[in-house]
Picture 1 (cartoon, rainbow, N blue to C red):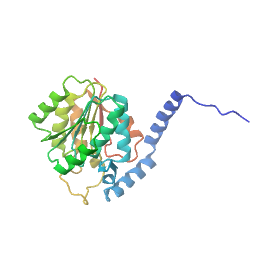
Picture 2 (tube, rainbow, N blue to C red; picture 1 turned 90 degrees about the horizontal axis):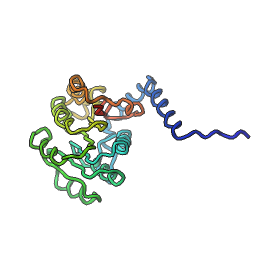
Picture 3 (cartoon, rainbow, N blue to C red; picture 1 turned 135 degrees about the vertical axis):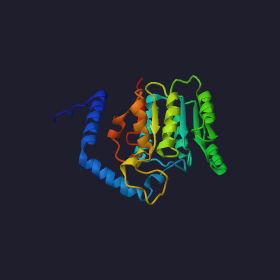
Length: 248
């Protein structure tokens, strides 16, 4: 009987990089993935997942990616702009038990009282702070900048109004808070890659969305780059080319 060779953990990690690269180059898989996303989106599939009973509005692929980024960068502060139903805030709260996260900030122009009650009854860490305000106002930014203070590791997730102008304003403001090797996540860049969502009418569409804002920002700002390796392994993501890493 031939003894099976056991590979080392480092060898396995290297193999995974190779597999992810091959997956990313497989045009057949890409076409199938896009077709599946477009058809599933007609049923609002990414609205169907909860964290601790609260809707997240994220795909499972993106949820796992958020966890990986938090594990890798160990942010002391997590800022989510666009609270919605607060499921993603609760995800960050849960993960803060295993990371160095000290504060979790949620910003939105509308945060219902019943959502606040549910959120704070489920948050065990008491690290969450809600700011009911316009994310692009200088007053809001100044308040958040003061909270962030001298913390060195900050993760920011932009997931509110998805029009190009609004997202670009957010990127230009909040990118200033990101330190080297940390991430600015721009949500719903997928809008540029799929047909107009007639089933879910919004201001944003192809040509007027977060991806357009990212493209314009990166033309002038060389401190950030798209971490494309994240998307290599994702089959159903809301954020293709939306994971921006500060490199200098």
